[in-house]
Amino acid sequence: MLEELLPIIVLIVVAFVVISILLSFIPVGLWITAYFSGVKIGIFSLIGMRLRRVQPRRIVAPLIKATKAGLDLNTDKLEAHFLAGGDVNSVVDALIAAQRAEINLNFERAAAIDLAGRQVLQAVQVSVNPKVIETPKIAAVAKDGIEVMVRARVTVRANIERLVGGAGEETIIARVGEGIVTTVGSSENHKKVLENPDLISKTVLQKGLDAGTAYEILSIDIADVDIGRNIGAQLQMDQADADKRVAQAKAEERRAMAVAKEQEMKAEVQEMRAKVIEAEAEVPKALSKALRDGNLGAMDYYNMKNVMSDTQMREEISKINKDETYKEDE
Image (cartoon, rainbow, N blue to C red; front, side):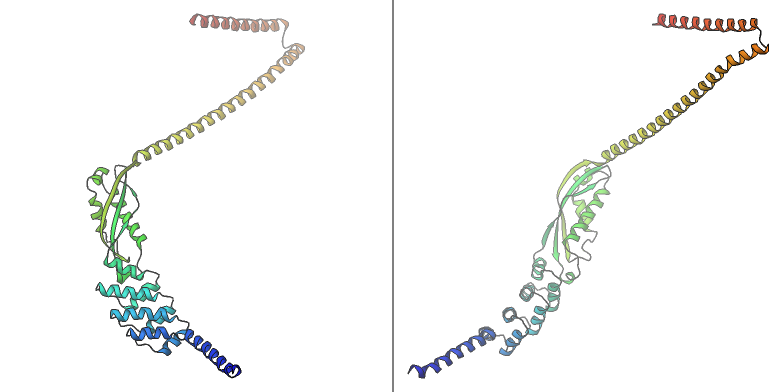
C-alpha cells in the first residue's frame, strides 16, 4: 500500500515546489490587488517586469495610488523612470499633491525634477506652504565706519518651472547678504540703519534676487540688527601704526647712513694721522741731513727748538686755563 502511494506523494511534493517557484516569480497576489483596485495590468506584464529586473511592487503600488487619485499614468512611464534611477513613489506623491493644490505639474516635469536630484514632493509642499530661510549674521560697514551685524529671514516659495537648472538656497542667502552689505554700505551712518531696518528689506527686495533661482522670494524681514566694531577707527589706527613703522624704518636707515659716514670719516682721520706720523718721522732725518750739508746751522736748530718749546708751553698754559674756567662754571 505504501509503495503504491509513494509515487503520488513525490508527485505532489514536486508539484508544490514548482508552484512555489512560479508564485515567487509571478506576483499573482500583486496582480489580484491591482485588478481589484481598478488598475488594468496583465499578468504577463508583471512577468516582463521581473525579466527586466524591475520590482513590480515599486511600479504597481504607485500606479494604484495614481489611479485612485484620478491621474492618467501607465506602467511604461513608471518603468522608464524607475530604470533611470528615479523615485517613482515620490513622483506620484508629488503629482497627487500638485493636483490637490491645483498646481500645473505633469509627469515629465516631475520626473525631470526628481532625476535632477531635487526632492520633488518637498518642492510641491514648499510651493504650497512657503519656506523661511534664515541667514547667518551678515557684517556690513556704514559710511561712518561703524560695523552693523544684520540677520534676516527670507520667505520663499518653490518655483516649479525653474526647479530644473535653478539655483538653490545657498544662492538666495548669498544674494541677500550681498544686498544687505550694499544697502548698509550706502547709508551715511549706522544710526539710519538702526532707525529704519525695514529700509534694508525694501531695498534688497527690489533688486530681484530670485532671478535664475528655484525659488520666488515673497518677503525679506530683518530679524536682528547689532552694532559691531568701529572699523573706521581701527583702520585709521592701523594706518597710523603703519606710518609709524615706515618712519622708524627711514630713521633707522638715516642713522645707519650717519654711522657709516662717521666710520668713513674716522678712517680718513686715521689715514691722515698715519701720514702725519710718517711725515714727522722724516723730520729728524731731514734735520740731520741739513746739518751735515751745512744748510742748517747750530744756532738755527736751537732757535727752532726754543720756538717749539715755547709753543708747547703756551698750549699747556691754555689747557690749564680752560680747566680752571670749567671748574668755576661748575
